[in-house]
Amino acid sequence: DLEAGLTNFADQYHYSYRKFLLQRLGFEGNLPQADDLLDATLELLSTSQVSYPQFFQDLRSQFDPQWQTDADLILDQDTFSKIKIKTALDPWRKIYQQLLQMHSAEQLVHIQESLCKYNPTVDLLRPTIETVWESIAQGDNWHDFYTLIQHIRRP
Image (cartoon, rainbow, N blue to C red):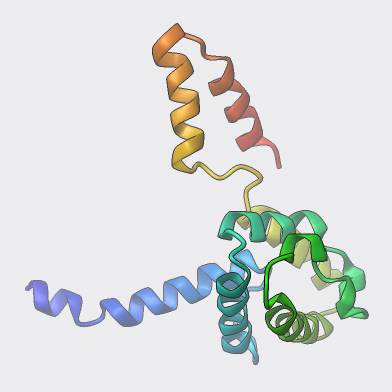
């Protein structure tokens, strides 16, 4: 039974991961260059060594409909100050802009909404959780916990 259940796992995982990553990039549905964008995104993250959470938070906070007409505006260079970044950022920008150009102004609003929906401003990574838990465990101080909850609830 286990083997039968796992036969489709790789395909299902790839489909789900692809869908999730596209949503985090602001897109939904079947896009002609989706695989190119996903490959370029993973290459960019690998080359730049920018963390996943930081990349998607920057994408969310910096998104501008003007990206549709000027690829140089897409993402701040300061985010990508690592070695070899130009070789990975420029191709990613080009593909991202091409996908944006396929959308109307109303659809760009939906893309921005998707970026906000799928890219939280706070990622619950272990260091964050440990910091909050430490103040609770050591001093029964719940202030950091409630502050974190407020940040999570913020759109």
